[in-house]
Structures are given as C-alpha cells and as structure tokens.
Image 1 (cartoon, rainbow, N blue to C red):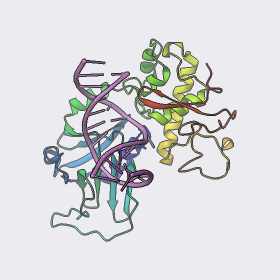
Image 2: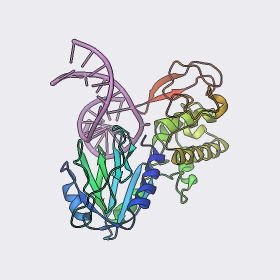
Image 3: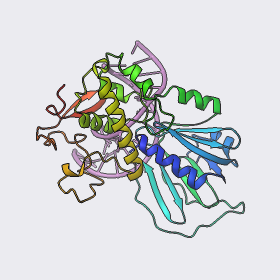
Image 4: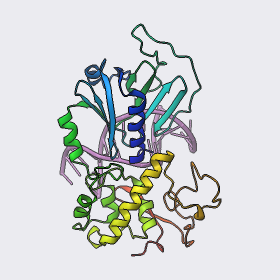
Length: 293
DNA sequence: GACTTATGGAGAG
DNA sequence: TCTCCCTAAGTCG
C-alpha cells in the first residue's frame, strides 16, 4: 500500500480531520516519547506529502516527518469507527460513542500492538505503527528533506525536467531509476512494474537510452495512475477491456494489475508468461514480449 | 516458537 | 551489493 498515492491520501485525511485541532500526542510504545512531548498540546495546522514522506505542520513551527517504510500504517478512529491507511493489518471497527477526558480529548481505546505515536483530538484519534521514520524536525529540516527528493507527480510543484536530467544521463536501468526517490518521488515496486509495462518499455534499458517522448509519456502515465490511486485508494492499472469482467470493480485483486505478482500467468495483452527477476533488491515483474526493447 | 513475507530505505563496504 | 531495521500475519513443526 504505501506508495505515493497512500501518503497523499493520508495527508488529505490529516488536513481534513485534524487540521486546526489541538492535539494530544503520546507514544504508547515509548520509542517516540521525546518527540511526542515536543508537539503535545499543539495545534495541527496542515499535512502534506512528498513522495512517500508525510509531513504534519504544527503551530509551534515544529514538523512531524513520518515514513511508513515497508510495513508502517496509520489507524484512524472516530465516532464512525476505525479505518486504516498504510499496510492494512487490522480489520475495521464499528460506530461507537466517544468518551472524552476533562480536557476534551477523545478517550481512545487501549492501544493494540506497538503504537509508536498516538495523536488524539476532540473528535478522534490516529495510531501509527511500524514506521521506518517518525521524528519531530524544524521547517528548515523539512525543506532540506524535501530538497533531497525528486519530483512527485502528485504535487503541483513537481518538475519532471529534474528527473529527466538524471535519467537521460544515467547508465542505470530505468527500472532501478524509477525506484530512486531522489530521482522521482512516490514510485514503488508496483507503479514501476506497471508503468513500464503500460509504456511497453524493457525495464533493463539504461536511462540514457530512454527517448524524450518515452519519458514524457511515462511521466504523464505515472501522474494519471497515481491520481487514480489517490481517488480509488487502490492501485488499479488495468484498463477495463483487459480485465475478465470489464464491468466489475477489480479490487482489491487479482485483476487490478498487468504484471506485478503475476509471475507465470499469461500477459493480459499477448498471453506470454509474465516473468520475475531481482532488480535493485526488489522483485521486478515484466512481460518479455510486450516489453522487448 | 521459528521462519517467511510484504507496495521501503539507510548505511556500510 | 550486502545488512539491518520497522510490524504483523500466516505457515510450519
């Protein structure tokens, strides 16, 4: 789940449901105790995402930087029950009546599992589990972190030229380049495999052999796919005509993707068996026929 | 209980 | 390229 679209959904959710609210911040697990103290009692101004990083801004000027890594996830709870964003591990809950403490903060249920950070407002709460990063930083440090990231197709300020400059000069394969967050931010293993398939590009082609037209199309397609992901909450890359049942919503799987996780299965376009290989320490999926260079 | 697996990434060498 | 770190669920013995 946690590719760029998930983080932008999270940012929107935080801004909508926590923006403008005073927050009680704790670390039930204890590993974020110092950071939690720094922002406890502050008001959350807004949230933003850049690639796979989430930044929460507080009125004190402090910023909370969260990276979900491979298995981080947020669980949200309010009067409507619970929902999960990230790597969903826990089933959803039901509507409930909220109790509040004398300060007006919701009395959230006893934390389940290892909750690194808990953020509570007068109307709900959010639990963070398993992040690879959760730290309080300054605005300057936040901007420094953002500056290290490549353009995020989901951000209006994204500059695809910056990615192109790196890609067009690199001997590294396009599949490895797409996974580098300092080249392009927000792409994970699924979007890399699927976007290269949709573009008919051999993942092993060096960046500098990708044509300008191919890059422009790839960027446009990634932008569209990520935007769909933000809207749907799922990564769906297959076009309806390539699904067994074009009328049915394919979620959550198995008809959402062209090649990812489909090793040995027939390509949805040409019928050739999808193959997998290791590339940049991750499993790369491709159709050897549709993606011949 | 040990081991595997997952849509990620930092740091060492 | 390798090692390690985050967490939880499922499998196996």
